[in-house]
Image (cartoon, rainbow, N blue to C red; front, side):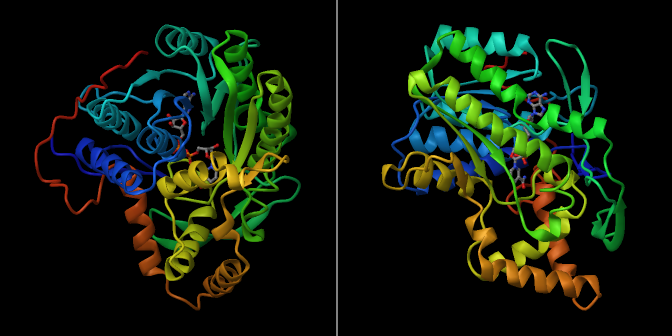
Length: 396
Ligand code: NAI
């Protein structure tokens, strides 16, 4: 099959297996060039197939020599459709990890369900014994509650007032105005149910109850704060409310795992092009300007650089270990005053049509399509490739 990108809405509906493998290999190569980390040895990554979760898994394996178990929700190829990018990423990651002598197994299923939690615990008991790091990196549009059976759908909306801003229309490549109406109480509640901390807490409770958390185990989940420009749609919107809940939950989890000397953290990461962030209005335009400023200052990072820095210089660095508020700021370059001042100035100019962002848009689109394995110089996209790729260990 010759695979071309097919763009719909804010998603690419095809993925390229060779391109995804290339992207995973680039990330592995990056980690191998860095200093080894005296870090975790048995790691569970929930949301392990793309973005920050995949990068965390790669850093744990190739940076710290860890055995990893990955949980995610992806689709294999079927009926002439390609698999999802996360499927191809995992196939490539597992092949590379196994070849390098590392344990790597995966479970494809709904992480919000108790069934997948039980399956994961059984696999840990059988093959790993105990886990010393649990990364919770889920970004999902909906969640069915394992007890009540209620299905919640998350929305990205402001709270209180409507919000009008510039945004990029990815179909027409134009800068347009978007107005987002405020969320209802039910929408706020649903977004917190999907993207807040309840499921993370349930995972940790069940893992602890099953005695598969090692003494001193660490757990971490990811959040975002960002600048004032995006506050109405992020920090002060429905997703921000969910992230507040995630942070409050981290304190509960801390108490719960205190007696095994466990630690729970929330890391505030940098804004980056991922499948999840592409779906948030306004954010892609901010990302383009941010990349321009950080690039000029030599401070731009991708998921893999962020996750390496998180593990190497914060989570497992005894000289700079996180303090007792259990909030790790790895968005420090993004939030530097000089960076934000330049981004704000550019934002003003974009709003009055004073600057041209054709190149920034082109760069953003390139990064976006790379998430699906397209646009790598070394990959021959005219060649026929096998779309039906298997993951070595898959359980679903
Ligand atoms: P992503 O879309 O690249 O990855 C999401 C992961 O969740 C994938 O592995 C997917 O398979 C998995 N997933 C989704 N629904 C699932 C389900 N029901 N069961 C099992 N797995 C499921 O997202 P990204 O951007 O890496 O986000 C991860 C976390 O990082 C999120 O909490 C997000 O809010 C946070 N974050 C993201 C930032 C960004 O700019 N992308 C910035 C700061 C934090």
